[in-house]
Picture 1 (spheres, rainbow, N blue to C red):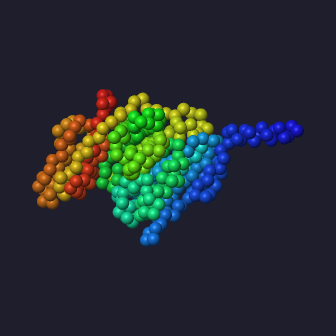
Picture 2 (picture 1 turned 120 degrees about the vertical axis):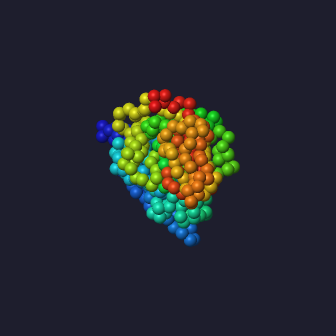
Picture 3 (picture 1 turned 90 degrees about the horizontal axis):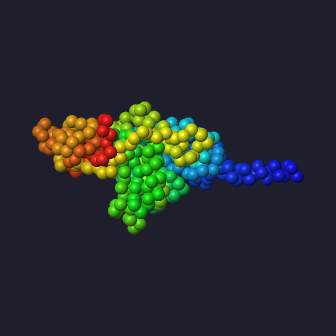
Amino acid sequence: MRYIISVILLLSYFQINGQSSFYFFGEEVKPGTKKHFEIPISNDNNSTTIPITVFCGIQDGKTLGITAGIHGYEYPPIIAGQKLIKSINPKSLKGVVILVQIANIASFQKRSPFVNPIDNKNLNRMFPGKKNGTISERIANFITKEVISKSDYFLDIHGGDASEDLMSYSAYYSNSSFPNTSLEGKKMAESLLFENIVVFDTNGKSYMKKSLPSLYCSAEAFKRGIPSVDIECGGLGKAENKSINQIESGVLNLINHLDMTIDTSNPKFNPYYNYINERAYHKSSYNGIFYANKKAGDFVSKGMKVGNITDYFGNIQETINAKSDGIILIITGTPPVNKNETILVLGKSSSINPKK
Ligand SMILES: [Zn+2]
């Protein structure tokens, strides 16, 4: 009798505290373990794979979906994902982490910035994707169905692409119709420990309409009521340890903040954050050569010269002056420039740290 009571107590303990196995792509991931998947994606003409790691925790908890390599030339997110294979420990995890290592592997292997070279589409404009579409549309469809829809929280990690000099930041989605989801996203963005936080204000944005596609990976999550954040870190085709480590430690702190670890240390937060509520885009009017006077992270005041565009004989075609006061989030960091291309993104903020 005592034995039976002990068994019942033990079973009820595991029902309350234990994490059950997680099933992904028809396979079981047992509590306290991780499993790697190579998901095949193909249509009549082409095929690719998506490498994904699923971590199933030892205790019950939420599910965090993470995507890296939506743009395969943005290396720090991808290499941080490689480090997270070891640093996310399923034996101390509560809940489940689904980590898409490289969403756009053709872009990565072919060193192709912005687009997937198989169909020349930008994966981060394809969401929610199409079951019977091109390769990029099918990748988006898989991530929507098998990662985003299974997540309680979502993080998409990017950096500056091959030509982009970028100031690192985290970002969160905000909408007055989803106050709680927005607030949870804000706390998630803070827990990623970047000093600068861009607010994706989605009020009035057409991609938030039910009838229209979400386009962006993390916007698809937010539209579904999932607190959703981005990281932008590193750029110019570099895989610098500083950026890689910053992403890795931010993700681990996010996991702690979301109460997804049995580790009892408190999550860290910065003493202050600089919120960027508005962004100004500068486009080039010419094809030519760009000479930047400034770099990402520099503060500029309205009218200040940021760079020149010349023709192929050194004649200045256009001088780029800042449209407003702000901090340079992204600036073209390599010489070629094309007409109608964004060459500068300024972040406008009312909370810039006056000590700087
Ligand atoms: Zn990107």
